[in-house]
Length: 400
Ligand SMILES: *[C@@H]1O[C@H](CO)[C@@H](O)[C@H](O)[C@H]1NC(C)=O
Image 1 (cartoon, protein in one colour):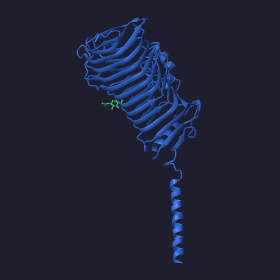
Image 2: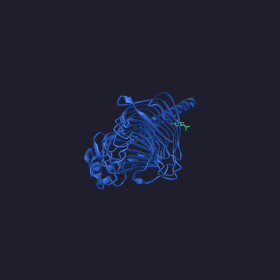
Image 3: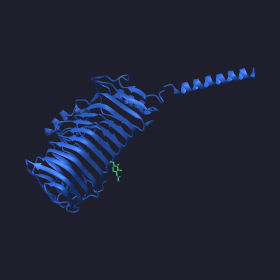
Image 4: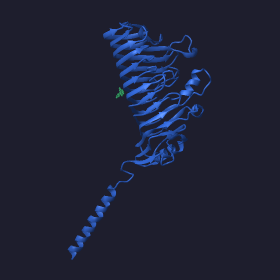
């Protein structure tokens, strides 16, 4: 009898344990594929006309407020979204924004044109944006600007600011009014398979701008636009930029630096395996010709192909639009810049130009295996206040 009771108890115990295990293993929002918030279920309309901003913000609020991993899902179709800020801090650090469709900015540039940014991601940690298209509808604003009329400044398509651990994969950015993508005050941002596309005559439509950020990686991306493909502003370090096709556009630029007297410099930047096609510049370092404590150092440009590029290799320390620095020298210290395996064609005779500061000459410029041709002839190199060394093949011959 005692044995029977014991066995029964044991059975119940096993049963209870089984149920407990079943329950704890059953899919729950906490550990299954993350909870998903579909913008269409929340009222967004895929007609390209109905303002869907509220649905997007409400999907974000739910994902951000979730204590476990969460997904915002944007199905196929065109969704009109006004200027919107998707803010943290969030209650989890595993938010995925999966976009199959297109976000469309209002076609009237007066709606977003004075707010600076269209889509903003701010104060977040651990966010992945997968797929999607951002259509900034910038063409009318560019036409306004190009006609010389007074027009709004325009909005950046996507600004990611004060955030960490961000992945952007497979995003397309079209026709931004201003910069396409800005990464500002961030740590550990990876962008891959990004496509930026705007007319070569669109003003100030930089592809990806990085400022005051650490650990930014840009891989496998194609950028065609009216301004810099990638621009790197003060306070940026540990950047890795690889497998980029750039053109049309103004190239990859470190700077402008040294606009301010007190400024954080740029260091440890690798730019490798890049093709420039028909761009104004290839690899450029640019600084204002005015006093500053800023710097650019430990920069590597490697495995670059130039196709008909106006200034394939250039350091310009005499940038001074609107005479904001008459007869002043740049305070920006440029040092340890390596150009390695750079080939192709220059659209102008001067293919290599180092125009450095008279007060702080460039030091540690290294050229290795550079071959640039201008109209089937040898191109030329020009050095002002630039020091360093050259090795391997050098065409044009080095002026260092
Ligand atoms: C330079 O940046 C890379 C990332 O691009 C990083 O892996 C490396 O540790 C950095 N080097 C230094 C000395 O900080």
